[in-house]
Length: 207
Image (cartoon, rainbow, N blue to C red; front, side):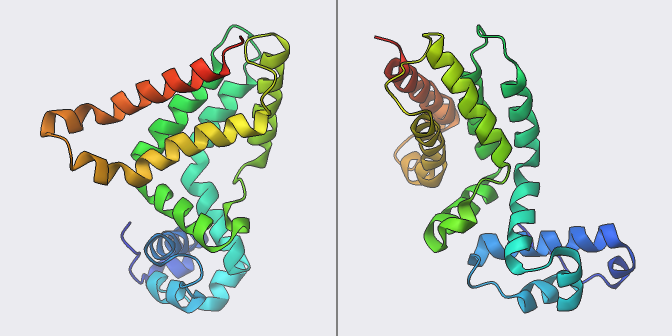
């Protein structure tokens, strides 16, 4: 992510100012992490004053949350539509995994942000859209009651498992790809996703 350059004109346009601040903040958060990024760094990169950042976002923690929510907003919209579907025959859990995997593949910056979240402060890793998690857990419980997913596994742990299986791949894939030839590299994301789905759904199948 390229850090935004100072833009005096954007300060006269609230929306442009917010966008400039968020672009600068994301670039710095990705590169340096939350703790090592100061409000002065962000102000300098965005070409605004610190007071203007506080005016638009409040604290640095609030700015981090705004950056995180903006980065995952498209995924959140798709995911919200998926779990809103109450058709018991719809493979919602499978679609959720595929949607997350595709999002992470297209947003390597967010993978780095997640790494910083887990390293620095668990509070930074709080769900950007907690209502989606709540609804998702409800759908898993419905599937358990319907006998489609084994009921002896805590729904929260199922979510942790598939998020971890998707995220870990994109955190380590670069080293794995060095062991493969060019043709294999082109197919490796799809091959891993296929393996993930087989292992995951074999495990959640009712015995």
